Amino acid sequence: MNEKKKILLVEDDAFVSDIYQIKLVHEGFEVIVSRNGLEAIKKLEELVPDLILLDIIMPYVDGIEVLKKIKSNETLKKIPVILLTNLSEKEKIDEALEIGADDYLIKSHFTPSEVVEKINALLKK
Image 1 (cartoon, rainbow, N blue to C red):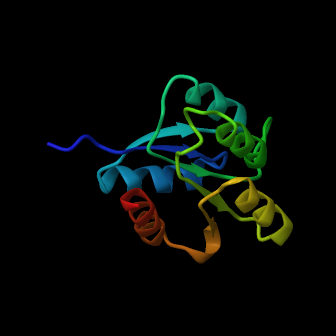
Image 2: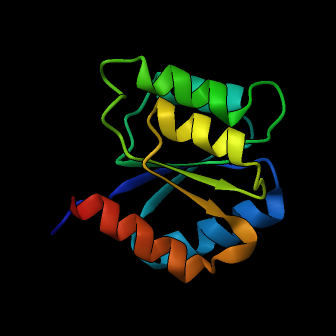
C-alpha cells in the first residue's frame, strides 16, 4: 500500500483551511494544518512534507518569510511550494516565484478540485 503524501497547509482563515483540508483528505492526502507562518516554521522543524500550500498574508510571519526560510534550508528547499492567496499583487507573486515558489493560485480563481490537480501535477514531477 502506498504511503499517503503529506501536505502542509498554511492558512490563517479557518473556513478556507477547513475546505482545503476536507478536500485533500478526501483525495487521499495526509494534511497538517498551520494557522500562521510562525506555527508553520515550528512544524517544519519536526516534519518534512511532500508539498506545502502556503498563504501569503498571515499573522506573525507572512508567507514570503516562510518561503525564504524553506528555500534557505537544505532539508526543505526541494519541497514544492504552491502559494494559495487572495493576493493578486504582481510584485509579491513575482518575489515569491523568484525565491522559489513552484506555482501560485489566487483562491477565488480556483476550485479545491483544481488545486488538487495542481498538487498532483507537481508531485508527479
